[in-house]
Amino acid sequence: MKILFDQGTPVPLRRSLLSHTVDTAYERGWSTLANGDLLDTAERDGYNLLVTTDRNLRYQQNLTNRQIAIVVLLSTSWPRIQKHQDDIRNAIDTIVPGAYLEIEIAS
Image (tube, rainbow, N blue to C red; front, side, top):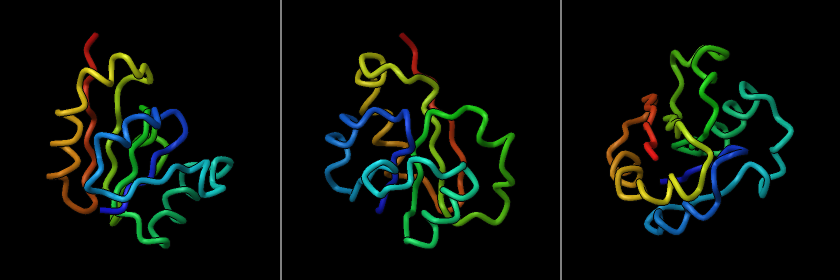
């Protein structure tokens, strides 16, 4: 699966996703794109999944008819996210095109 990390998604998480291709918006030169433009660009470039920490994405964007799946991590804290890498990887491995999923990250 081709995965894009949005700004705020801790880059060390990519080490848990070795069976996938993971890029960051920053690496692609897309860090200044607004959410709608980022989703459009990612879909055009063949990304299957956006991983973000933006809780407001679903309220700011019309996600109907999107092909790209979206996983929202409900924390930006790497130490917290690190404890949930298995849950995150399992969610990513089973997500379907166009799905939207929020993952609670407890302390």
